[in-house]
Length: 282
Image 1 (cartoon, rainbow, N blue to C red):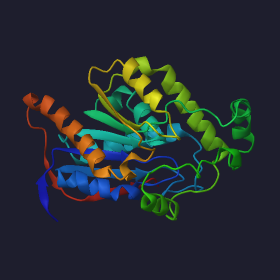
Image 2: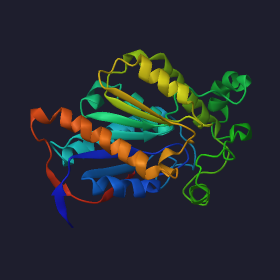
Image 3: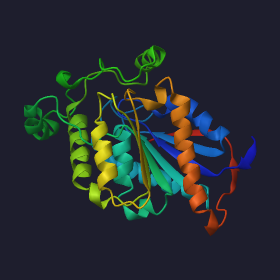
Image 4: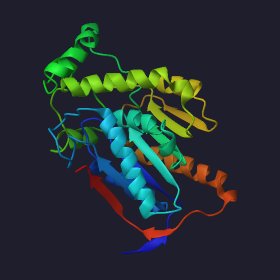
């Protein structure tokens, strides 16, 4: 196995219903620019345990993210760490970074199309969701199925996503949906307390999550280092759009800029093995 100097490590947290293996191309782009890559699958997703598409608590995913970061940090002392999250994974990353012990491990976070202002398909769902999530948590609520909504302008990417056996394509489960509403509501109420350096990216034509919520986060966050980029006409799965290479490079450029800004504190990189490492929650 080759050994090289990595400038930093990016930890990938995937979005709802998908899995970390979908980010192999992005990982290759990162490693070609001397960034190491780790990733994990949420509970109920990809290769992890649990009922497919069922998330009993997103706080569990947040806790898993923190534990995963601690493991990576212990195995790679001195290497700068960044955390990446897509969609609901972006919400997970943002909440995780609200805990001081997690923020202290990070040089910054990157979010694509974060789920920050999620609304139920119908107002009555917001009223019934807390009760239903306790009584019938695994029930599949067909009215909340967004599979038919385009998430990429690349037909091949759409086909690959929905033919992937590890991608959950069924209607959203009640508890899972309730958990998304809860974390979204919590984050919206606490934008002004966000202090972690961040870069948020969103397509203006996204029909799954709200690009205006990303703008609100940027406007309200207390972070001294914060950046936003809105891609005109782009859809939800930014790293699977036809311009995925450009978007990936924007993320790499942001991380390199962050590292350059702390370079005067000394070179913190260490020699570690190359490769894309993907972990599943056991």
